[in-house]
Length: 325
Ligand code: UD1
Image 1 (cartoon, rainbow, N blue to C red):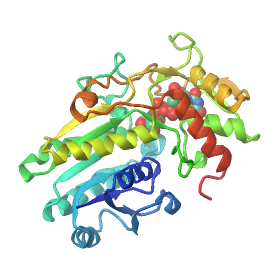
Image 2: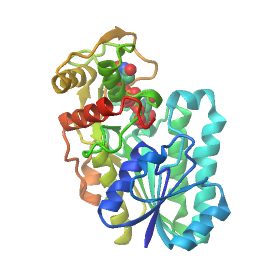
Image 3: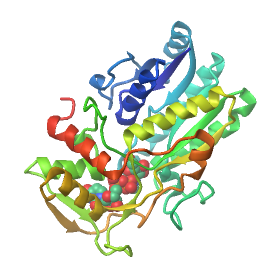
Image 4: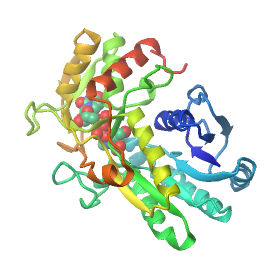
């Protein structure tokens, strides 16, 4: 029984691979390394290749006796998806269709999918439940929703799946072995770390005039190791015979940008150099999860608090200022 992890050399994928291995599972990673890092695959076989390579995927299924798949392989830059939509439809949707087709042909019928809270667009209220209307605002988010829909339609083929709608993954591994690369991320936490460590860089806070207590936007930051564990729980659920379902993966707690800066200042014992800029187009005011469903169905709950997220990120970035390079 081996788990195939596509995109397992990416940020969340690599943490998930380690969690699976820590629980004694056999894991094979398939990654093009176009955007992943070989060095982040610490303790599993890495095969460099593409999910659309039907012959390769078939060979892997047979050789390693693959019984289930965790599928991360996709592009994830929201802005890029708007300027290069075909790249996103082809890689994220057509690529996944090809992968699913091959897996069904091989009788591999358990599938965990890396989806995103971006499928909600700008939710009317937070906490966001799974019954919130789906209103993607980017091609990236559209591709995530398209795959969720494809998976929902596959029960006639016997394929059962869990789609995990991630909120804001952040932090690094507790043993400081793997983490995120600030040069390839536009997310808040790596940018805060860069502002602390790279004198040539200043964080821009995107707006301080939102209708929130301190004027900055609110998000649900989830430790990447907690998120990794949710994939293990999803596999266990499918192994127990669980039916296809979709759930949020977040902590249920909202944190503002200024609260994040305060914690980072405490952890680094140095204030975060920043300027106040204009609002970023398309930024919702406040988005945090209602994690009731994931807790009840997958028995998953976040265990790391915000300080632990920031401490792990700080340890990683100050010891790996050039990421994996
Ligand atoms: C983004 C993506 C989302 C993806 C998520 C996790 C967009 C519109 N959304 O969410 O699809 O699932 O990342 O990868 O890109 N901020 C600053 N200054 C910065 C960077 C961020 O003030 O330099 C603020 C933002 O305005 C936001 C918060 O920090 O309020 C978090 O931003 P970010 O880390 O980019 O995540 P999201 O926009 O929530």
